[in-house]
Image (cartoon, rainbow, N blue to C red; front, side):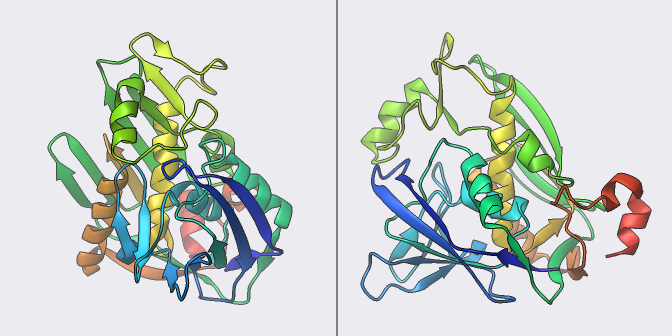
Length: 306
């Protein structure tokens, strides 16, 4: 079934790239409205649907925009909403960027759980992948293929840095997102920081909201939250980016050296190939750890309730 939040969520913090302090409020929304952003600091600004069709920039973060109003770095919040099973929400924000907080989705998830969810009287729409589709650029590749449950897998290669090659797979069921990837932070190489700042990016970045790596290792005093935090964060981003499809994707995502731009192009490819997917109604909540259905039923049984 569809869900919205049960009460208003209020979050404040600095924007990673803008460096501005931002206030963000998340409100309940009606059935079928989806996730909608609105810039309340701009006169006569229009609502901006959280949809791949409104993506206007994918440099280092995902930015959506409409009628000259934009909201950036939405992926961590969008991933949290998807992971908590929130289908409908109205988000007011008084700046150009969602607060970065600690660089992960954890605080967003904590606040959503405090607010609680309200079950709505209509089934959730999901996108069931019927056949594999892919998009590639050089060594980068993203693909979606059929799967009874949502799965996100990926690989990154930073072979000339301490990050190295990392792989991870997330089965998007039973609260695995919260437990396995939600606290994994955004990251960058120290040598890239000056270039980003010269281009007006990373103005609010610090060791409090990002993992920074140089030739010797991780510069953050506390170190990593897990040894493969880098690839886990990439999959966190992928969950947020693919939620801009407007529905839970019932399929397997694989990203090789992928980022926001590749995820955006994968969504475009998906919707350009209408025979590769179909809408289905969902009456179960894949994300929730409260649904014991996934602990006791095999994949064929799960498929039978779709």
